[in-house]
Image 1 (cartoon, each protein chain N blue to C red):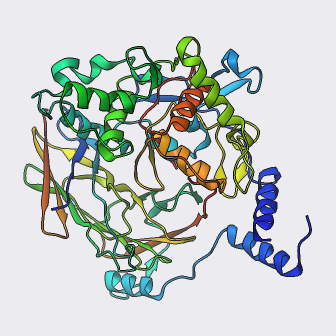
Image 2: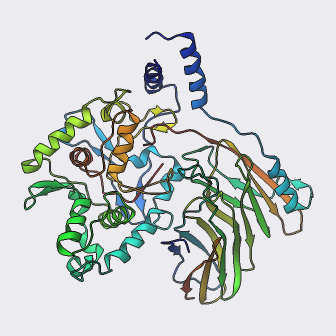
Image 3: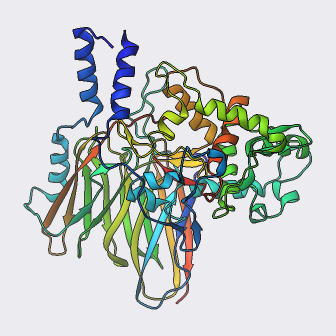
Length: 283
Length: 108
Length: 138
């Protein structure tokens, strides 16, 4: 059976520690010489000892890739942040408003990205930042919703992340968000797919090791949206989740699906304490 | 014209006369190499930025010929001498005939 | 787990493929160099080429070149479908003859830099960059 072969090879590759030196490196990340990013810190209590230390994906990339994130003029993701700044100030929709009409400057949104996804009382649901952006667009601006994983959306999310850089991720996991959080946690630890892997299989049990030629990180999303060298554009967290699930050879979920909303809340909470780092540069 | 093409250039705002400064330039552009195929198997034609120039007060600093092997969102870092106050002019030339420009002033 | 011989061979071949795939040097790289130098000899000092030993991702590989006093530096990727990468021509207001950029490499190969120096002679440097087929890239 072909799939047994794949599983065997996958298992071989995962357990092999013969590959090049594993763990995260010791460098420190300061962007533009003045934004200090916390990239390693104590694991939040809810992780129950599964991890002692949480580590940003930045540490698992090579020196050249790390350098690309240290200056906003080296970071290609910032071109898209610039584009989003223009969009921010541009009127769109039947109400004749731009984002700036209500929200002022993008810098006034500092702190917002750090607490998303979060419970929205009026809507009675956990919302991701993308959902909230589209809610503003449709109900307050009278504009069309953007595609969940579209270029406009990801650039805007990156703009909002960029003004929160250096602030600690702090998503709430209790209160009305708790049920969604539990669902995300369950998804994180459930093995799926022909390769029978859960998020934890790679990102909790094998971070620092290599799967084929990829240096496995802890799968933190404090750096999202991420500019990936592989596709030379910004990528949102749901897009990455979709690829990961597909790579376990399971039927994957859609961006914006309830599964990924729950997963985003849970995965974000695993990074509580790391700094918001987006737009980051990853492979 | 390729859509959404946006330059982003880092130039210090001031320098001393004769100082050598570092310039970083980025521009968003897909740099379609001409190697990829679309869903039907047809080659997507090449469409790249093929030349980048930087001039200061009309004199050439650098003139780069780009081939399809330059990555999407072309990036260049290089050094320039600033003999007196003036203006940098950055120009990117697209295969499709479009020309993108950006300027940055420097005081001395 | 039990495998048939056929499956074992397939896994072995698959595993071998999963590692680095080297590319043979491209003859047209030599043509491009000849066009740039006019067939002149190239010294092996005078130009430096910085490139990672292993590329994080073949789609975006940072490189830098430096050739004090040069008027131009030609960069080629010997294993790409077309070897041309860039030609850096330095003008009178260049602060020095250095440049950095990011390039695409289709597979493991030599990246070559040829500089035309101030005295009209040529210099050449090259580096082998390993480009791996990734992991679970998503």
